[in-house]
Amino acid sequence: MKETVDLSTSPMLGSIFDICKETLASSLQAITSAEVKLESSEMNTVDTETLFSEYLGQTVIKSIETTSELKLGLLFKTTDISRLSNLMLGGDEEPKAELDEDTIDAVRELTNQLIMSLNVPFASESKQQVAMKVDDVAVSSSDDGYTEENYISMEFVFDIAGKPVPFILFFDPGIESYLISGIKKAVVSNTSSGDVSNNAQQANLNLDLLLDIDIPISVRMGTAKLFLKDILGLGPGNIVELEQSVDEQIDLTINDKVIARGEVVIVDGYFGFRIKEIISRAERIRKLKD
Image (cartoon, rainbow, N blue to C red; front, side, top):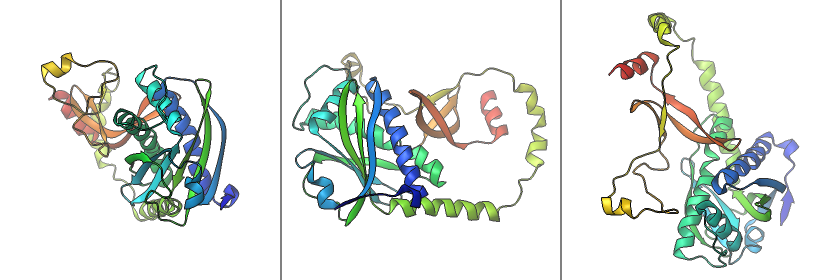
């Protein structure tokens, strides 16, 4: 059974729906370097059997929100996700109708970027950390370990490089209450905290003289060590695995000195950096002098 969600009675689900539409469109455009347009979308509550019925034997991307352990996932026609993977890698191969090892690796990379692109806007909306990531890529069966009676599903059809690509993004129904709980915690925290002392501001007044200096900054996603023979063997489509986990925040550096940490975001087709943690003003200046 599938029922359309009345978004007027659930502002949080409405926000989730809007975030997903906007973020997935911009992410797909950035990942595939192709023009992406939203053709249609709808949000439903759907039982597990109905959810998977149209995608049996196709591709399921099993995912999880690591803090709450809530499950979510993506359902694609295998030929569609294979075509998107080819676009990501800049290849011109024919889309594959079945998953093989190479296709699974490419699909995992693509869909992990899609899923993780939702973390920052969800965290901003809920006032708490959200850490969603891909757990597995597999051929879809009747339930694939999703045991809830019903799920929140969002059905999208995007026009990507002139061809329609339908897919479903679905969430554990507990996602709504989890995000709302973060907002409630933030309200309580803000109410109980007092005014910030002005002492630190007074101590740093002399730093204002330096504020007009131009300084280049860099975003460091991680590092890796490779043998020279491996470096010489690199080519288009190769993936270099970094030592940094997808759950860790990205470093913002000046002269190789970390001054902030956060997450990569995509805004209007461009990469950006959202600051989640930053060192003190005085410490930033000290690092620049070291």
